[in-house]
Image (cartoon, helix red, strand yellow):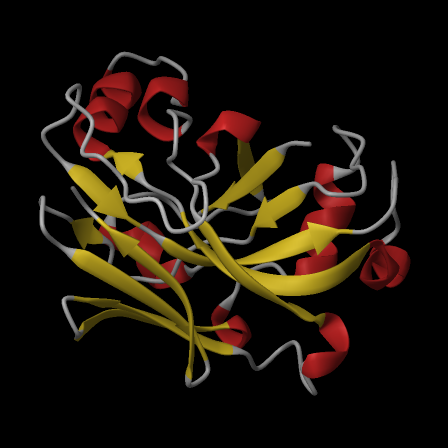
Length: 203
C-alpha cells in the first residue's frame, strides 16, 4: 500500500506558495507509516517550527493498473474520501532552497490522516465536489473539484505511466488555497459537502 500525493493541482494554492502553475501533474509519495490511526491525535513533531495543514480529497484505488488511458481511469477507483497532507513547511523551504527532495518535510510518521470514504456512486458529479477544512470551528480552506487543474482521471492516467497502482493505494488529489499553520491544542475538522468526515487534534 502506498500514498501518492499530487502537488499544485489548484492554481490559487500554487500562487500562494509562489510556485508556477504546472503543465503536467506533480506528485510525490508518503509511506504507509504516514497514516494516522483512527481517533489518534497528531503530536507536533520536534523537528519543525511550522507544521501546516493541506486538506485534500483522496481516491481509493480498487484495482491494479499501469499505463492507464484517461478514458478508462474512472474504473480504477471505487471511493472518495478526505485527508490532510501535513507539511513541515520550514523543512520544505530548506529542501527547496538547497535542491533537495521533500521527504523529510512531507513523509514523516502520521503526516497523512485520512477520514471517511464514500462510494464513487454517492457523487452525482465528480467535477463538482465541495470540501472544506475548519480550524477551531473557523473555516480556513474551501475547495471544489471544479477548480482542479487536472481531473481525477487525468491524475490516475499520468501517475500510472511511472508507477503501477494497486488495490488499496491512496491518491491525495491536491489542496486548494488557504493552507496554514497549526499549534498544540488546535482541532481540525474536514468536510465533504456538509458532512464532517475527519477530525484531528494537535497535541
